[in-house]
Image (cartoon, rainbow, N blue to C red):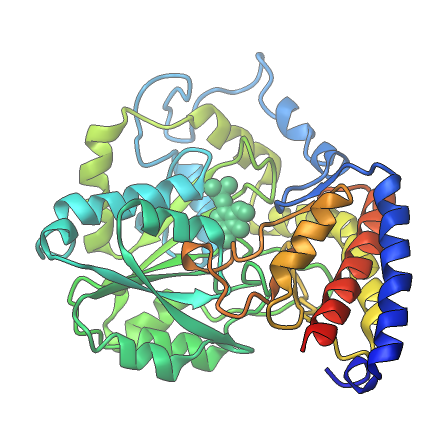
Length: 425
Ligand SMILES: Cc1ncc(COP(=O)(O)O)c(C=O)c1O
């Protein structure tokens, strides 16, 4: 800490008393604001409501190859929806399976399949003893929960401004018990980092000791730019092709944050061999996903251009929320040396880093004052942030007024925790 660090103990004590008064003032307001998850707000959801009319009872119910979407069948999805995702991902339609409403579900099922049946002709992971995953941190809490559920050991790999620290990752994969990695390559959750071309190429070029090493390329924020100028992400399978490593990557995506998070469409993209393995399991698991919803999405979104236009409308809702948070941080923290934060060009999150040892105190103080944030530590395996310094900010859900009130509280709590810490040193 620079500026606050240079204050005398007397000055810090005075500041602490002021901050405590401010905190009491906010606590007495009896706020009840939830910023714990990256969900669209109600108004943002309304912008998608024409989706509900896209398939009225009088309209078409047949796919382009004459299949009735109301009936059982087509477990790998309707052809026009495969084409929609093909346009979105830049992957051939035959390498895509369109499924139900959740990509998290697809990831869980894929890990489960590797555990019980193995992949690439290798032994099931559960028979291979202690299996491990590389985990870029901070990361998406639900990835870590899936791994924890299956008893897969998680090893932290620090994130850099260009993606995971590749020197660390390349070293880690020399261990044959390291079987994979979950990652969010564009507008990562929670930092909003997009992997650089060099990082994507180094990932594609990896030669892990484990033949059954799998990267779950979770492209949840692939088209989620907030500004006209967004980040670009190199297409992973094109890079893998150069190195013959297509079997190493399983890509997932969904329309959760394009249309409705509870009623979107999810898809999985993979090499021919991996698609064959997944289809074999799916043929037992389901007689078909919700094809009515798949067709509705095609009629509403149309194609990749249609998706891009719809995302511009979504961005109009997110932009002022991101601007409000960033402006507030700038106003309240600049020059004090008590916080750093990311300035993403897209996605759903801003990452705030407070002094070591202060994140859980900040989150607890906020909760006390009626503002619920994502739990401190959630962005790390086992819920343990080694520095206790990381806080995920999810500005999408509250109204602008609520967000502004929540930011007032958060900023006071960060200062309070930081000054307490300085006084305790
Ligand atoms: C990185 C990431 N992946 C997946 C999901 C969940 O996606 P789905 O709704 O498709 O299950 C989220 C939701 O916040 C996410 O942030």
